[in-house]
Length: 290
Image 1 (cartoon, rainbow, N blue to C red):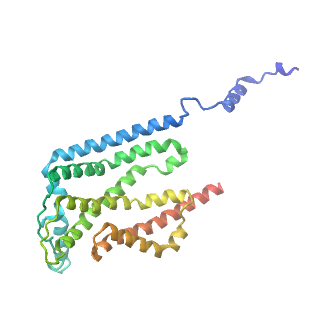
Image 2: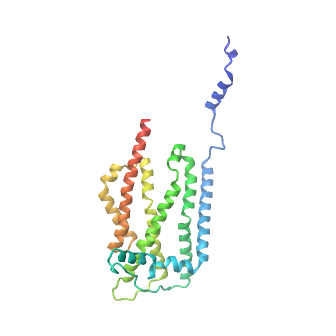
Image 3: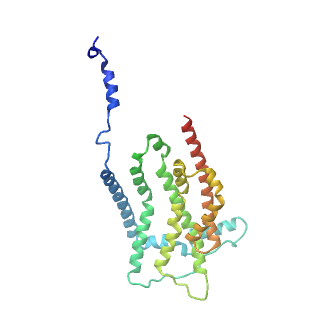
């Protein structure tokens, strides 16, 4: 029988077509297409920051007096909680403290307006962080395999929780102690800080803490790429402690208590990251065996 008379059936051609099937132009994206997509992700992220910032700006004095200037007020939540804790454990008012009273001043024309804008859009970034990270994730996700997408499912939620935890920790824990130390430091001069200086310190106490709390997520991805291992992190634990203390010294005032307040959570996060790296290594080993 001649070869051209052999009936191979429709299934043969279907399988053959599958093997020869090439990605369609709609699925493939050029470098310029990626840039265009990235541009829209950036635009949407900026819009989220602007909208959140405008909402904060329109709140006016309420947001500034309640949130930004909160740690300089004697009735701030952290001072009240620490005082209640002191009384509940039988120490009376020994742990109770309030910041030294001081007034904020402005020395330049328009400083209040510019500080208000700065406060609004930095707060807008913090509020819009989950959406911004979601936009980043949407841009990165198509480049991952389906299995990798399942592994990091919930990454936006986890990163958002860690970021807000860090910001709240900086606001409710670092800021009160830092403000109390800086305002109470006495060398015989009157303390009358500028509004812009106070705002800068509040940003320094909160936003970096939010980013630092992303350490476990960063270690997860570094471990997936083989750049970090649990054994190496354990081996260089002492070096990490020095780095942690340096970071704590940079983002906090020269106050030992405040530095330990940020250093201790960072060390805990480092230990958690070691366990995360170890779990990732076990997953990679299972994948290699299968």
